Length: 362
Image (cartoon, rainbow, N blue to C red; front, side):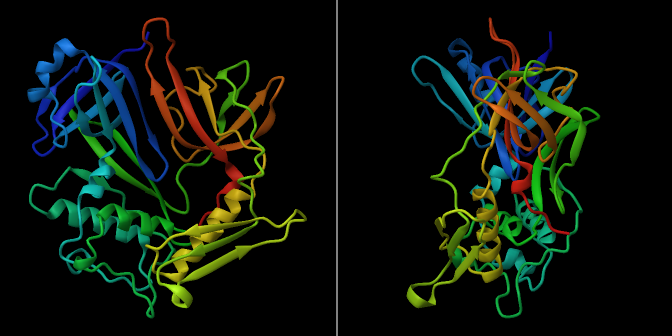
């Protein structure tokens, strides 16, 4: 039987508010280039602890399994609902969506011409955490890349009058052609929960030959293989900022012996032709994939111990039943861990994407 514990801390001081917050109906996990989330329920008779242990928008929460930190983030919602007291939290990067570049160009760190998008991400966090009452104590990897953001003709900039969120700038940096990927990580540093913004280039994770998801071994509920003609396209037209004939446009197309199918992307916030072309290419590659297992429920097993694989890893997947016949490499794009409760066994829902639907820089 595995032991779980949920800690809450004051977002600024780091003071521990609760060493073991009593939660039920818990589900949490990280994601690829996203903050991840946690949902849980506080028993109504314990609602009196909210003022001291849970303060939405000002409280960090960490999930621990067998003394190992598995996830951390910020509580954003805690309010009664139909006789229950649900709690909702998102990873630390969700805080960037509540912050803006009020100085412009991250207080003179930009604009960027042929800049490294990894540096843009670090600059965003540095700007965020140097402002009064804005330091979450998030450490950012020193990863560098050969990807570029901004050109002499179109420098990547952020004017204070644009009221852009800092989260938007992280999305832009990750969205350039061959750009970096990111996720969040927590671990104990002594008796302090350390939070880290991990940057991977040319990719996060690696191909794992020591981990597998297999029917009859550790796959609990196999999902059918999807063959969807409605989502298929080998021609993608991406429309960026501007109006009429002046609107930015990028087309990424290939011939593959199949009937021509087109997809239009409406991206009015994208102001750079390089970013627009990268988004079109990424979308076209993803939409050409046929035969995809998008999620699996797995149990803790020597074939893939919970915590032994990470977001971004490629894992060999074998799913076989009366409907499904699939063998191939799939990439872990996120996972959600649901602890055992009542008659329900501990389970992890792993979100997957075909490994060959990704392209990397380098």
